Image (cartoon, rainbow, N blue to C red):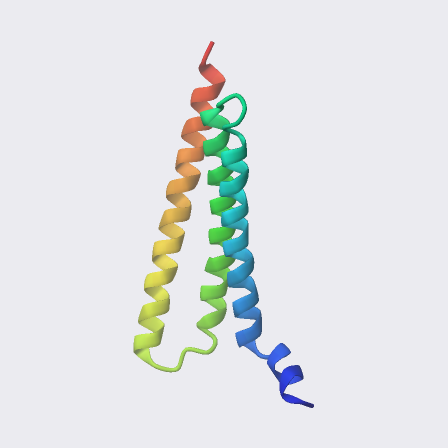
Length: 110
């Protein structure tokens, strides 16, 4: 097997691929949320689109953090990954809470 084939089978390639996909989801959702503001501004819809995209992107990036724990060899690497995991999960929970809040408020508006 050549070097390129070995790279495709390594964790490093798939970690990078999932990180890029997660970042792409976040950027795409922000672009679509900006699109919701034109021509008639709909702030609630724009916030919901951005929040849903960020939740999905953070889910992908959290999965990458879990995959990286398979390669962690020192306690400092494990602590770093644990901090990333906690930050991403807490941000994801906050965004899900905000989504529920905005969704419940939009249902009760006359």
